[in-house]
Image: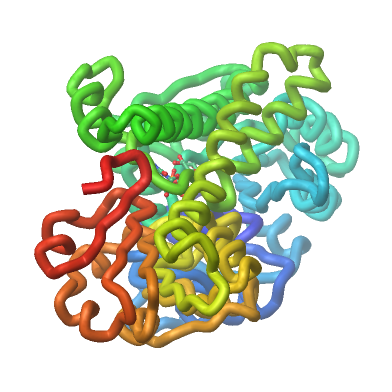
Amino acid sequence: MALKITVIGTGYLGATHAAAMAELGFEVLGLDVVPEKIEMLSAGRVPMYEPGLEELLRRHVAGFEGSTGRLRFTTSYEEAGEFGDIHFICVNTPQKHGEYACDMSYVDAAVDSLAPHLTRPVLVVGKSTVPVGSAARLAARLAELAPVGVDAELAWNPEFLREGFAVQDTLHPDRIVVGVTSERAEKLLRTVYGTPLAEGSPFVVTDYPTAELVKTAANSFLATKISFINAMAEVCEAAGGDVVKLAEAIGYDERIGKKFLRAGIGFGGGCLPKDIRAFMARAGELGADQALTFLREVDSINMRRRGHMVELARNAVGGSFLGKRVAVLGATFKPDSDDVRDSPALNVAGQIHLQGAQVTVFDPKGMDNARALFPTLAYAPSALEAARGAHAVLHLTEWAEFRELDPAALGEAVAERRILDGRNALDPERWREAGWTYRALGRPTA
Ligand code: UDX
C-alpha cells in the first residue's frame, strides 16, 4: 500500500513540502490550525509569494482543474491522525518576545494535538528548526500520549530551503539529513526521499542531536560568513578599500568560495537572526556558551550595518533628516520574497522616519506586509513614484528590477540625484554617468 503523508503547518516550509510530496506521487494531507490558510490553499492559492509554488500546488490540489487530486488540506488533527503513515511537523519556531530562545509552543502543540489520534504504527518527522535536545523530549512525549505508544516513532529531518527558492531547494536538496533511532525509521525516510528527489543528493543518517545541530550550525556558518564580509566592509571604509573587490578576490580561493560574501546592510528574515540567537541561548543552557560567544559578535556586526546605513544617508543629505524626503527601494528581507520579518530594509526605513525624514517605500512584492508592520511609512506604487522629490534614494533590497531602473528617468523625478546602495548590487558607473552621486557601504566614494 502506498504511503500516505500529512504535513502539519502550511507556512513556507509546510506548504512547499506538502506540494513537493504530492509531486513525488504521494497522497498528501496538509494541516493548519488557521482556517483561512486552509481555504486559500484548497482553492489553489498560496498565502505568501514564493516563485513556482502556486503552479506546483495547482498541479495537485484536489478539485482543481487538471490536477492529480493527490493534495488536500484540513484543520482536523483527527483526520490527519487517521490519514497519515508519516506525519511531517513543519510549524515555525519564532524568537520568544524579549528573549534569545525560540518559542517551541507551536511544535509542542502540534505533537500534543496529533498524538492522541495515533492508533497504529506511524513515523512522526520533525522538520522545524529546534533547540538541540528537543527531538528526544518530543519522542518521549509522543510515546506517552499516543494510544499506540512507542510505535508512534519520531525522526528529525531538518530542512534547508531558502525563501525565493523553496520549490527548487525542496525538490533538489543539497543533502538530506535524518536523525533516527531505528532502522525502520531510516528505511521509511529512504522510501519517502527515494528517487527522483534524492537522486544525487547525499543522504546523511545520524542521531537526534546531530540532526538538530546540523541545521543551526549551517545557519550560524552562513550568518558568520555575511558578518565577516560586513566586518571587512567596516575596515574597507576606514582604510579606503573596496569590499566588493575584496570579496571577489578572496572568493576565488575555493576553500572560501564566492557565495554569501555580499556585503551590505546585513542579514534578516525569519531564520538566520533568530536561529543564531536561539543557538546561543541553548548553548548557554547546556553549559557550552563559551563555544558560541563569536555569534554574539556576528549578531552585533549585523545590527551595526543597519545603523551605519542610516548614518551614511543622514550625512549624505547634510547631517539631518529634518525636512528631507527619502525614497526606499525594497522592503523585504531579500528579493523574490514578500517576507518582511526582521527586514534590514524596513528597519533602516523606520529609523530614518523616526529621525524626521519623510520616507516613501516601494517594493515589488512586499508592500502589503510592509504596510501592516510599518503603517506610519508612506508607500508608492512604483520606484519612480517613490523617488519623486527625494533628496536621497536608498537601495535596500536587491530586486532584479531595481538593477534595470533607468537612472536618467529616475533623475528627472528626484530633488537631488543621490543614490545609496545598501546591497552593493547596482552598477555604480551607470548611475554616475547619469549624473548621480553613488555611495555604497564598504566602497570608496568615487
Ligand atoms: C536561510 C538559509 O539560507 C536556509 O538554508 C535556511 O533553511 C533558512 O535560512 P533564507 O532566510 O531564506 O534562508 O535567506 P538567505 O538567502 O539565506 O538570506 C538571508 C539574509 O542574508 C537575507 O537578508 C540576505 O539579504 C542576507 N545576505 C545573504 C547577505 O546580506 N549577504 C549575502 O551574501 C547573502
